[in-house]
Length: 451
Image 1 (cartoon, rainbow, N blue to C red):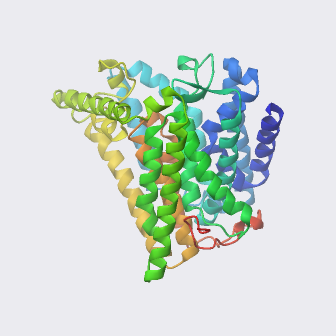
Image 2: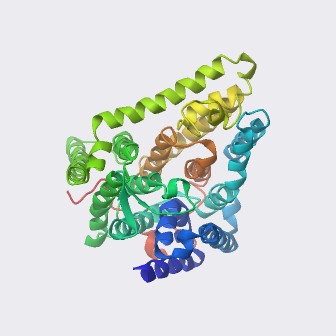
Image 3: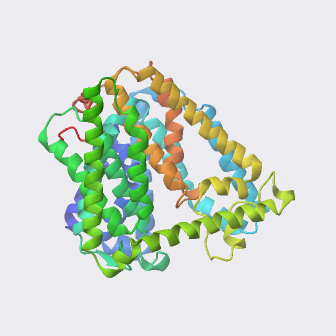
């Protein structure tokens, strides 16, 4: 199995350089993929050098892929610098500046420095690799297939074990000696969301099966990872984004799409309950109602503490208490509140909150313009619904588990929205000659159409 994983990773890396559509999938699936690669070889798992080598190897591959993609199509640089880019630069620059007066500034600045490779990959490479909805559609389909395969390999790998009701990998150099279960839960949730929204133009049984399998194995992984929020937000995302996935004109269309949504949610509910009921006592305890409420209460206490501390410090209302100040001030032993919006106001003040709100408004405006432009094109409408669903999913997660220095994919997707909007009428429906097999139109049934 180890040889298969390493060979698959090597093949994926080569394809990412030669075929642009395989490169962004390395970013979207990076963190769970890294854990899978670590499980295949002790060097990657047990040494700091091995751990870091995966990061730099993927960064090198993406740099090569980005350079080759731009060389093939110089128009990829069009619109790279825009209002959204400037706001993101300003937001992160302001967050770094606040470290000078933050009581947790030393740790905060270290976090920023360690995240620089991720900033480059997600904020620079990603917007060059995906420039229009057709490229996103290709990326999303590949992500669903590869994400489902990665999920299946994690579930059957003997290296991934259950401890305290959460699946993970033993990593001597990681905090607590275990891999991050939230990354695995995020992968499971991503599989669920993509399977629900990614349409199929192949009309082949294997891809339809991948969508069903994606929902099932994604749900299993979320439950085994103990990531309650990931499962809940995947379901919420499907419910929120479903109405835009296809026109609901006509009673027949409405009934069929409603049935598809209901069947998808029933599958998720049934599989989740089955995994919990057949799991260990630790798994049942983690998914019990009381344990879930306890997790919500803990995050609520974090938010209230930070905002109360900020309100009691009028001199810091404008500039904020400083990035990573919560980690130094709170009595809970938490590094951050796990709520990005609260961090924006409490740690970065009115300045940081205004910048973040501006970023959200720009993203909303671009999404609105895209939808207005493509709402009568069922193919592009389905493509956009899958993109929006992934963005919404990660925005919800950022207010459950993240902080600004770790929200790579969400911010990267926000950077993509503006470029996709501006390129709607510039690019043709197909990419410039690469991998035309992936340029077929989808059927227009984004929610498990085989039902």
